[in-house]
Image 1 (cartoon, rainbow, N blue to C red):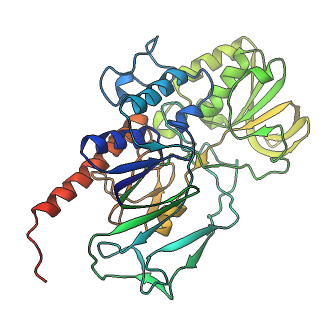
Image 2: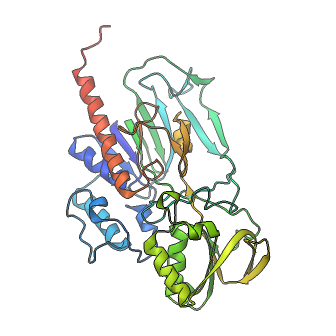
Image 3: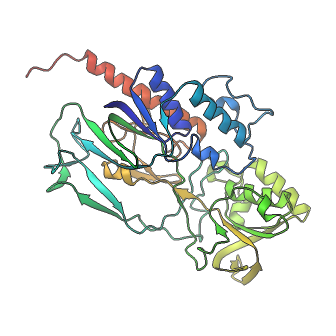
Amino acid sequence: MFDLIIVGAGPAGIAAAYEAKKSGLDYLVIEKGLIGNTIYSYPVGLTVFSTTNELEFEPSGLKPAREKPTREELLSYYVRFVLDNELNIQTEELVESVTRDSPPYEGGVAATSSLDGADGVVLSRGKQNISDTNTDTENHPPATAESTRGFMTREPVPLVLAQKSASVARTSQPRNEGSFRVVTDKDTYKAKNILFAIGAMDYPRKLDVPGEDLPHVFDHFRETYPWVKKKALIVGGGNSAGEAALFLAQEGCETTLAIFRDDWENTDPKQGCIKYWVKEPLEEELKEHCLNLFFLGKVIEIREGEIELENENGDRVVLHNDVVFVLIGSDADLSMLKGLGVETEQGKYGEVPVYDPETFETNVPGVYVAGHFTNQRHIKGAIDGGRSAIKAIMDKNLAKQAAPPQSS
């Protein structure tokens, strides 16, 4: 049994793994994609507008060629850090379920009787229609309620709970040392503690309009060069949409950014505005007539070769295009956390787990969270969260060792 299993190998997961190794914990990191998978998903050639000390695990480790690192430099640093420190990370392994074996304390979801000795529930997902964006806000700030107004509708994620016991209920029966069972597409593991460091890009938001599933419509922007000398339309009001429009316009694509006027005129970083280092070059592209702005009312329909929009005055307009990027955000998958009994609340940028801001432990003992799907939206906050979770686990272990033995 591991002392800790970490789900996710982004900045939070790597930081936690490094601290766990230094602390002597028996740990394992399981990542469904690649090391630094969120960074890998950034657009090719993106400059990361954070200072190096906000991105590093140890001082002076990240040495970009210029003041700010590129996507490639940051990704190389994270991969190199994992390899040099021989961190126990298994990539391309998907966690399918996490259930509890004998929860250690009262509270949470627990079965009053069990068919196989394990407490908890098995999740099977129903149809979903999710909308939100949560990536690191220094580069891709999540769309606010204002910036997604009119883009989409939001429906709750239906979860089907298949009971593993005769009844599933709240229990207050104290247990001895608890554990968790983690099932992946490759193996099954047990751990005393679980840290979810999963990021927040699992479910891209949808416009919920006809034609959104056409092959020339994308919910992620990767690179510019397939679209040189073609017509592109970007729908969105945050940094991700702004960056895509800028990259495309600068590299010879006839680019239109469909955005709410309030989002274009917004200059408040706390309200998810397009950051100045993206906004100012966009304004230059407008002056050079390399970029078009369309002040959006709503998207009506996407068709092969064209898109029908309604402008801010209510007039309908058809624009011809070769590609459409719908960059209005994404949501984290919180289903495993909810299945374990972790409570959630509405945060500034969407639904987030409830956790102690000092320890990053949730209401379910032994379940910790860190990363961009919490209230910590920057890479630095994700790294700090991973470190804090390990410190909390070590403090709890020391407290157990110092406690007098219980009489039978």
